[in-house]
Amino acid sequence: MKQDIYRQVTDKIIADLEQGELTWLKPWSAGNMDGRIVRPLRHNGMAYSGINVLMLWGAAMEAGYGSPYWMTFKQAKELGAHVRKGERGNPVVYANTIIKTEEGADGTEEERKIPLMKSYSVFNVEQIDGLPEHYYAKPEPIINPAQRIEHADMFFTATGADIRHGGSRAYYSGGSDHVQMPPFECFRSPESYYATLAHELTHWTKHKTRLNREFGRKKWGDEGYAQEELVAELGAAFLCADPALMPEPGTDHAAYIQSWLKVLKDDKRAIFSAAAHAQRAADFLHARQQPEQEGVAA
Image 1 (cartoon, rainbow, N blue to C red):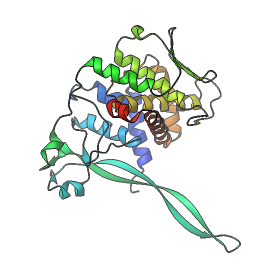
Image 2: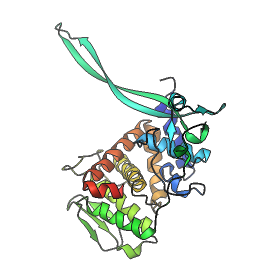
Image 3: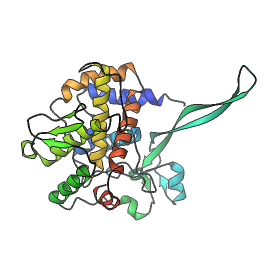
Image 4: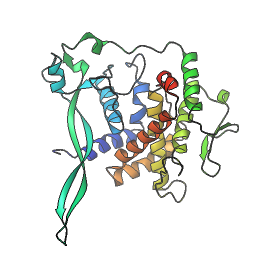
């Protein structure tokens, strides 16, 4: 790639963290983002995933875009539209593998898979003129908070996780394989409750019988711990974007920011890995929904 996309994205998130901001929560704290918050969407309505969600959320916030739709210069042209002169695109990435055939020491041919990441530019529809009208329509607002909460309850119940209520702390216990939550009425808002539950359920997916995710954690606060917390943060943000819940930062974010900064500064690919793990966790929890229920909750 002409630019080091790993370093470019990581530097942006590091800059946000150093100001005390969480890139993955920005869409919900913006005054100009009216209506339902969704994941960034391709020109055909398919949602972006993983690191591209963070990259496009951040780009939309910086520029003040309200539309979730993004497309390439070529896709806009194929739709009879044109990107306005002087507009700059935002990078997204595409991960793939190429197969290379090499000759071994004994003369036999061996195939080797080589990971490949490509970067290309997309434009928000608010940078484009002449698109079909539906691209410019604002997202429909949520009907009412009560219905939204009901859908969230259905979604999280359908995961099959052992969710218990009581006490004053929220956590996932690996030993007993259960999620512990304070009573609902202890939270300052329904959104805060469900965002916390989404965080803990992302931890729940790491169990060896599920996604078997392990970062070599030895003790509280080490780099492995920070990596898992970062995955849970992103997983909660991705999940809350789907049932249209509003994630809220917890009181312990300030303590985690310094450990996250260390992880990101030491490894420019760490945020890509965390986003990929978070996406797999979110996909795993979605896959446990009944088809008819998933259609309501997503």
